[in-house]
Length: 95
Image (cartoon, rainbow, N blue to C red; front, side, top):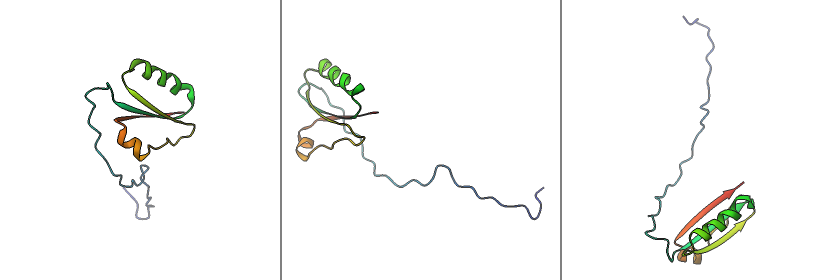
């Protein structure tokens, strides 16, 4: 049984407080890759993205590839014109 003068302890939730996040549905899947423009946006070390880029271009020659590379943890954003002309984006962060 608990004594009359027992201490009361408060503990904090280790998960913390989560701020609400806007969610957007995924884009619908492309019916074919032939003739589509796919943007490859890669940031980080070249150890992974160099062979990945070569492999994708070799395996899918019918795709029009556009590529932006950045040696930083934040990827380069698409311009407004690129957003209009790009059918899909592959974003890779390699560290």
